[in-house]
Image (tube, rainbow, N blue to C red; front, side, top):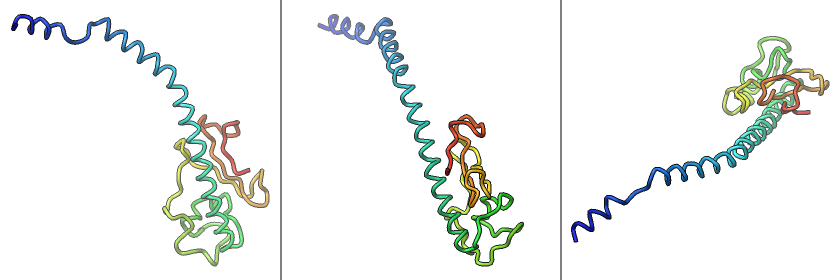
Length: 146
């Protein structure tokens, strides 16, 4: 009886071919699923940039209500967390600033948002956008407020 038990225990486990087949199947599944996963990640980053742009727009509109103007390009988005020290002064600047986090966020692609006032596309206010995943300005993947 002991001899039979020893034979069974030495034969348990997977052969090299079985492991190779399992790894091949796993590689095929990953190869099929990976593009869809990466596409969803890119879509998520684009949506996150749209949400951050909308949040920055709200802060810029609050600044405009208090100050009577949008920050100039020179003053930039920094005017949302610090009173402007160049250009037109704001007499009614909110001492708390206009962003809760007290910092200008980077876009989801680890770049700064581009702010231009007055804007080329919005001449009565500002242009605000992310240059997108290709890190090139004025391409079709830019995420804009116009």
